[in-house]
Length: 94
Image 1 (cartoon, rainbow, N blue to C red):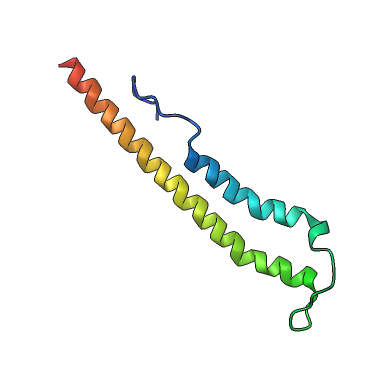
Image 2 (cartoon, rainbow, N blue to C red):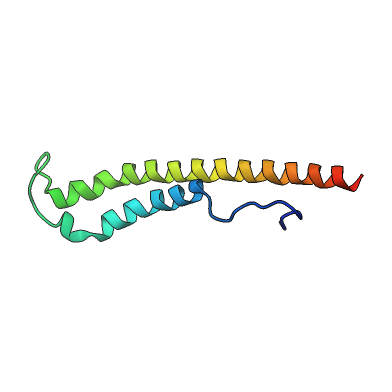
């Protein structure tokens, strides 16, 4: 949807930056294999290598939900800004 005239809505907002970081954290954690490529400490007989990766499944879900909520908040703010700009533009036209 094109932005209305006179509605400066920045493309990069703090919410979008935080959402991107929230999505990057699990990716970086899993790609940095040397940080968890070891057998100790074991939990319930399971080597660290395996339980660490399994731990990241729910942690990644939490980060993904946080990113979703941040983007949702940003979209609501953008919608409100567009609506306010439309009202202002309509008021100026009268």
